[in-house]
Image: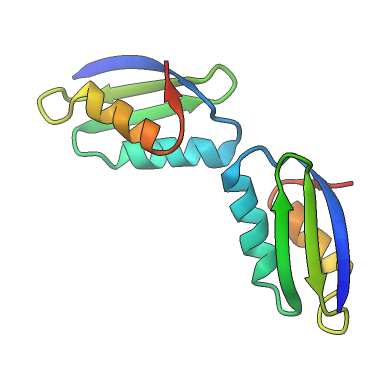
Length: 68
Length: 68
């Protein structure tokens, strides 16, 4: 299991939190995802044998946010 | 048919636009609702015999925003 904190720009409200947590959270191989809205941090635990970091980043960017 | 522009604080992104337009727009008596995110304006056309301005404001506030 991998653990990473991504810096994500553009999340401005609780709807954004739900969009990121909901969409990343339902990816196969993602065990947990937690957004800190104030800091713009997204903590993710995932199984790198099931899902790649790039796929996770793509999912966040597909919601309209920038991964730093 | 009445026409009003409300000043709404706290809308920060397109999710907020959807929350306001979606929830106000489905109220009986509301003919149209359009959010200008940049200015924080919400233009509403409604039939005051079917829905009151206070009911509309309550719906916006229920989404977590302040009507000025």
